Length: 198
Image (cartoon, rainbow, N blue to C red; front, side, top):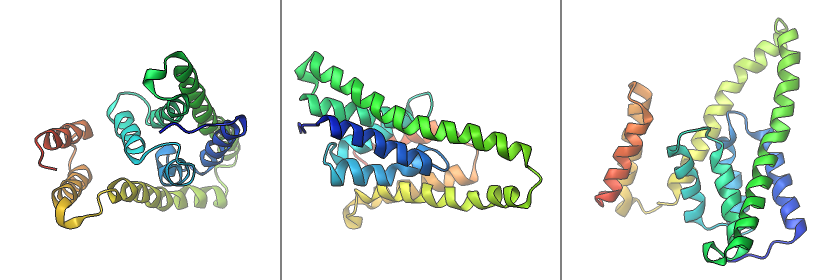
């Protein structure tokens, strides 16, 4: 995959992630379904495996969850540059992709959060502020469920992929009902995949 990105494409990448930044209630991960639609489906700048690998790698790595956005930008730039074997030009485009996506996803939401938090703190006794805070919980949960569905929908052959669905369900129950750290579950999933169980 070697898409040719024009300067307007790079600007479009930045502005799309800037728009998603303002929709990322609950974190950038909640906008992953639209990122998939845009990067994989509409623009075809990433493949499905690159998209899901970016999320999986960033979630497994220590650090902020938003790192998956940097990996997606890196992969878009790397693909535009011709891949890893293309040398310094590909690496430069990968850095540009990473900068475009990270600046897009971070700047608008950071400015809005800073401004809104200061205002809400000054007006915390207003009924509308309390109602807004209470209403955001269900929205965040729904966005996280949509993201989880997107990541598992790539395996849409229930007859063949039932172990994967079973592992997903058991993992969700364990996270919900116990205090087992999620990294143990990620490790168990990696081991199950390496052994060919899922």
